[in-house]
Image (cartoon, rainbow, N blue to C red):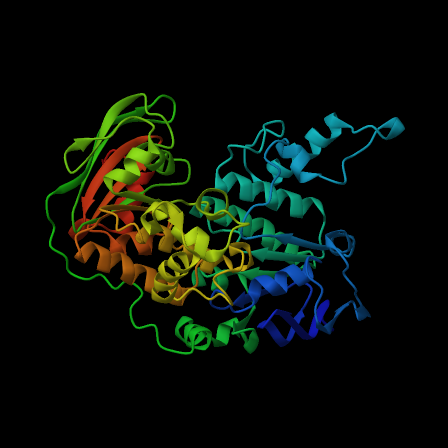
Length: 498
């Protein structure tokens, strides 16, 4: 059977950086094909070429054996290519239904938008996905998981022949992932070609029939999934052995560093209380929507709390005052790096020094050399892949953007580090580096509070696991007793775990 879509000799450069070099890839109808590689390997660039965002510098794209020229996203959609991006790209002030059908709204007479039909179609798509989302609600304020579901509904509405999925499950719970996979398998079995990009190998091996590995902009190999192992794929991705994903160093647990007492925000979470000691890594686990991110936003002062108090080294913090939280030594690496962690138009070095710009001034003046030196130190330590630190941070891959967010806050020498999904969308090699960094910080006396939806990460890194269910803490499990079953029982509100 001939391939449905063929990429032959694709190359793309940005200045002196060769993002893709002579890449060949074949996608067959009725098959899910995994594309894996470290951040910066060229996966996102390839996706954007398929989406019509970037034109290739060299190479050809053929669909059904016919040459395909993509001068923009509209051409890709017309050709039946739908892309679900790693980061949701919704218009925040439009409704969910308007986001799904943007640019192709159903029309009535005199070219007026048929709002009723648009809402009905959106409702049908959500019913097909098995989720409850109001088509009329604004996209602003949706969780990352719900934003991703809207993107999935948008792609499905296109009746795509080629479905490109760039980290679609990074912010989804296990139930939501299985629901997505059921829809994806149905599309695949109906003859669509699926290109699936993920750093979660259990998903890759469960869904895909073939795996292509990329490294440094080149295709390293393509193989049948059944003939491969996770270890073999990892070796091809990183060009080295990743000996330990969870490098948990022993650390002396010291005095209470962060104390949360009776924290409440009406309708969101209630009576949250816990302590994180110096040298301790505490994981905040639970299903999507349990209220974990909302709790840490209140701790950091982004959202106002209705009751309770937050203390750092015994000193209470004022309500809804992020400046006071930063001054007290709290740093927050947010889940949504593009919207909350970075200023995408600014350079890498400026983003990396934003929280401590005054510390780099002399007589009130900021000299570029000081900014560049400060950013270079952390960029080197975290191995940020960037052509120049003066380039906009938007030009970096998702994983390297996450490293810049980490660098920005680690440069403040925090006493309390809060990380929300620190390895979301990060490749396996970089995950190990982030885990090693968190462990080193804890060994140096930093109190680490980590929100994570990945159970292996929670169990591998945490000294204690706090579990939330529907806005309440249901368990506080020490490392020695923490297991997948205990955490999941508490996350689903089972009394036995509580």
